Image 1: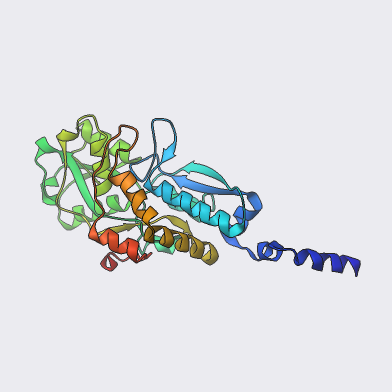
Image 2 (image 1 turned 120 degrees about the vertical axis):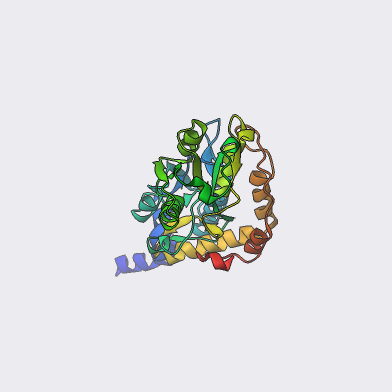
Length: 299
């Protein structure tokens, strides 16, 4: 009876019952005191390593606000953030197998991927285009006929270029690259005529290149607008609800716009370049009415 009374008294302590009710990622964070974030190494300005070997970016800033919300929800003064580099090929498996808790990069939210992972509210819209040297005079997708084209392995973009190659009978040679930096380098070296990727990432790679004036982005797009979202594990409803709530509050606040301007309208490391990409009307709508929809028509 004394033991039973002791257990009941402990259960009555503030926060203990709530801690026992936790599940999934929130339980993991509470018990370990850590959260593991997957980041990209060269997805400027979303998630990348700067000249001081620090992981920075627009998506990283949003994720750190999510971490603040987790600490508040769990009533923890400190949560250690472990950083794990990911690529286009490894990011989904590492979320699915529990190695990382959030993937903070430049990841397209689509129906196919939602079979494996979940996403929080969209934080950017892009479209799949290609970069090439101006001297090559490649303006449209059909201009790539017979050319060698590169895209990043594991991305939606390489799938789109392979599908376009078959549908249009273009006879392109499609090369997979390890990451965006490697793919752009192949264009710089002349080993590929074009690099197919999200237009905003292409803009950042051009801006940070040695001779930005040599390159241009196609007007033609391989896709409709594509939403970027932060990935988390499927079937973890309490964690997703908290992440959705925190990102929605951030986007609706003045701070959301400030974070956007910091990375898209101001000089950014490592070279102090300004991408000068104002928030579009569609992006303003997303921030006012946050959504995790994978449907391009929703935007």
